[in-house]
Image 1 (cartoon, rainbow, N blue to C red):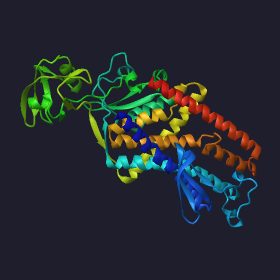
Image 2 (cartoon, rainbow, N blue to C red):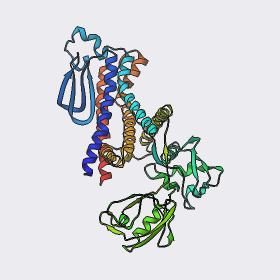
Image 3 (cartoon, one colour):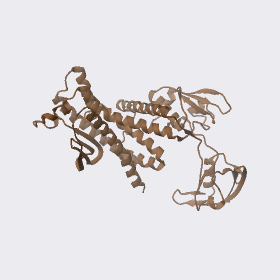
Image 4 (cartoon, rainbow, N blue to C red):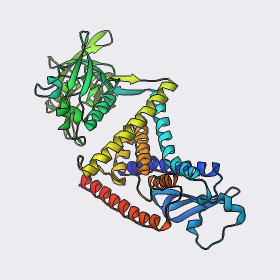
Length: 445
């Protein structure tokens, strides 16, 4: 079942992004008066097609699902074949360089617009995120040395307000990549604020592929163990536990949070436990006998409890669009910085991922719920836009490089040089794909 979910989530994530990207090219080509011969989802041999519209554009599905293309009327692709005089003005290479730039740039731009729209929609709908409150850190950690003792709430990082843990982590990641201090504006539980500095020297030693927050000693604050769900037929239901119960003690010993409750249940080895706590305005006391979960290989009482402090973040339409645009920009810039660091050897090439890893993450996020899955799609859309803008022949960025040189020199790139560049680009893309698949398989193994 997980495999089927992963495959479906992968197709649902990547398919619409490819279509949206190609629709960007198609829409601007039509606006510029260029004749579109084929719109294909997928590469290689056409397996299904239909023709529509006055130009009888062929809408096709091709064999290889990793990509797509818009085929326009182009004299370079049919040398020696005379183009109908009525279509000469609609041929791609006869367009001005600025129109060609607009048509090529429209694909990546469509991906960025889609990402902004998804992120804005999520912000307006409201998302439940872990709060920025931290719990007590080890004395040897960077967080402790910066003055954090547990219970404090981070309100800004390097001057940028943060309302959730993912936002805080994102700002710290940017500080790591930029090799600068991370200045945390911290609100204390008893009132008052102070600045906690995570020095660049500490951040520089971190691997961005790892859990950087844990490495710094930054851990999410845990909440009291509140019962959020009672599994039907489980020991908790049979004992009389109810949704909303707050468990205060186990066998007379206080439990501070959900992790402490889990630890007590797992350590019971099936021995009945006396649970007591708060229920509404009163209290409760029950005895529950844990059962052994064969799948997880642990003792359990089959209830779900709150674990971390959460906040619901919402935004109005204008604020949501602004947040979506800023997140898209920041993610794009960070992606380019990471690519630069991979080229210079500062970051491992293991960060290059391919379709297998994307499919794995698609399946994982789909199982976590629609909010997480849509956020993942937005991230992939940004990545697709950035990747296509790289100045590599065969990609949109390579064509934009050609046209930029044409703007500067006043004449198009010689066909012979363009042909060599296309071959080099094809070879480079093949190497990148091989590296990505190798990294994907290495992760699985």
